[in-house]
Picture: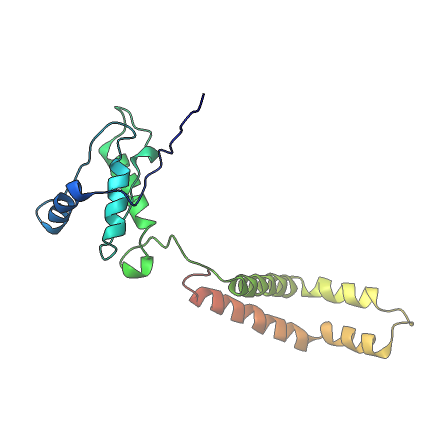
Length: 187
């Protein structure tokens, strides 16, 4: 016994001659704001739309799926509208709508992430050194007082516990505060 199964996903190469003229008219007419395709499950409504989109790539299309709504009598209009707007916003480049506050998509390069990670670490370390500089100095002087430590190590310890180093760290800390205060979007 041979079984023939067919996918119910939309096709984009069906004959839409019956619908094409009506869809073109409806999309061109400025007074028409809603278009509905009705029919039972699996009748081909989505295939008609997908085929029309393939035949008319010059037109811009956005998809909104009502399957994402778990609606019932209590679902208010505002919730439904909000979910539709959310789907629309995710399909539009936010640079094309400059008045929006929704910065939902932003492809961040790995190099940018690394740069900000290092800058945040520098900020945290400099803040800790500024606040706990006396503890830092005590730690260095207590850890490297061994006579076996070389002259280079002792000179480095001397510099890292000096007031000049504290001033450098304070400048780095202040500079990082100014930098992070001036950045609008970190990523």
